[in-house]
Image (cartoon, rainbow, N blue to C red; front, side, top):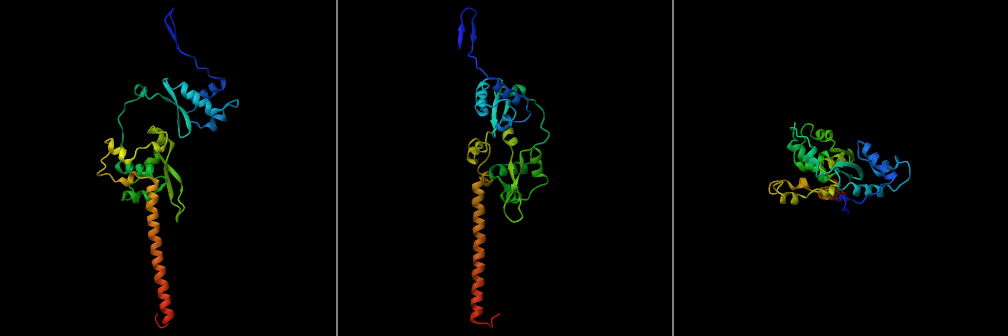
Length: 238
């Protein structure tokens, strides 16, 4: 930064933006959805290192009224967090999420991918009417394939819109149950900690159930073999 003593004008160093970088800038401005690198590469007229150009533009916009952000590997322009209050609209909330919906969302967030039956098992109660449907209408939750077990139940996962709504870069940015308690957001003495478990936590629980099933099968086989052995010794016992 230099200062002109004659007219007291402060001049900031100019950041040069190439024509290709301007194209990327325009593409992102015109898009109504976040774009990944491949989508941007398909739109530019000349070959360019799009990722490097995006990083340069991100630095260029870092101290401006709008910022270039990357969420779940997709890029878009957002109002600067420092100025978001100036543009926010204050309006009454028409309807809050029910306790069941909040618990269901929490379970999906921390256990995904997770089936309907697994969610009910963790909560300890059956689903209420439209609980999952409400979360899917908000586009915070979506089907994420089917679990490779008998019946092939649908598994549910969170969406990019969920990350975007809660201003998260990735799922690992989510706080743990202990962090939530330390911040005073939940009462750790009364909350069911399994709701804020992890996929690993639930997998361990499933492994325990599987071991119990195999244990029962082993006992049944042993009883059957013992019975067959007794019949061989004494054919009249039937």
